[in-house]
Length: 386
Length: 245
Image (spheres, one colour):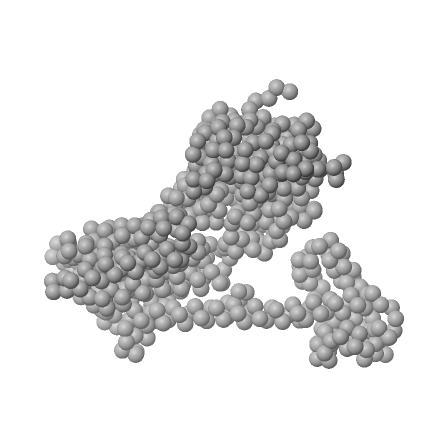
């Protein structure tokens, strides 16, 4: 690997981490779309900042652009508060207008501005290593690495300092307010971090990828954990993984780095969506099938408990008596046998002692309306699940 | 009994989009009562609590807690919001939610430590939820979630408790557990204010009641003012509670 290649991967990874942190909270606050709005509407801020500073990496430009991000949020909330339109409509109204103002400003000044629409949308990660930061005459690395690195340090410091405040105001804004942690301050604090991060990452990865890096890793992490700290950690790992694997995919395909990273993010989310241990589609389908059979089993056991008559308990009569297809009856019967819930004597089914205990307990739970307890009880009784 | 005033509300008016939902409320809540706030939907019951706690800004009037503004008395007050007001799919555990109750006394930046964890575990035990401490909150039943919220208020170790419909959507055993805890709080000299829907249980559960329907209709001891007259004024045409008599 050349130095430039390593530097690009470092920059991409830093951007991924810096995006994953505010992204996690945006996803939990159901505000994913606001990051899309910010990433587009900061464009006029960048253009104006560029006119003033003539340097895409100037801190003033970053602040100006971040300010446009905050203005976006304020405008969206203002329009929404009028009660005339819903939040998503307000977002859809605000950011295209601000973005197009930026587009017109670029087009009008295309001659003397080194800034074009492609770069804005997709970034120019491949060129990032060419713009060096020189301190006292010596080369200390690409400028964008230092910018996003500084933003990341600030973000992490804020995250560690205000973790509990962020958590409580995200989970329960009413309580946060009553406890004295103003949800408004936390909201605008988070929006500021998201805006600054977006601007910092914008130059490297462009407006479209910033959104993907904020939302996709957090959304995937949300599917595999039930702990906020782990969710942050997984989101960061997913982001870095996509950044590096995306870089190599671009290298291999000789395609856009930003596009490849976004594609990797999409693939990563898709696989988590399919294979996540408890919330994944496959796990959910498997669990539904298991529950269907286990509910049938319980129905069958209750039937046995309720009926002493031989004809009600004869294997051959099961199908007609509880009105099941043959396959289902057999599956249920096998499951009951495997778990020692029933015994079959001369084709007549009876509950075993264990089966009786289980059924009586289940009836108790059903009567007291605590059906959820049945699920816990299954762990004690079942050797094999449905 | 001559009592101190825990909460004093003067001329409180609260509006959403310039439409008042509470008009000119004057209300005194004496220390040590277990009070129900009753009234029809849209009467402003939750709004009243939220205004007392500074979550909503009134357009007129003032609220004081033991003679001082709420801002200075936060640590004396615990709040149980409506269960439906939060996202129960949030990635966190029962214990963690209860620990949020300790955040107020910690203040900004400081993190909960062993002491806060121990207090939270004790609160979980009081509501009979200790064995669920590591359970993800979406895996809890409605009644269990309400108990967690109650534990979160208990851990605040406050003097005044505000609860927004704590009995909504809970099973009978949880309702009994909650009311026993509320009665124990009153016995310990705390003041408890509950937004309540089930009129039948008011005389059994509470000793103080406030009738509210945008304006305050009446407030006082249940035995004196919980009658058909006030119910009719609050709920409209000829309301009778005779069913429970």
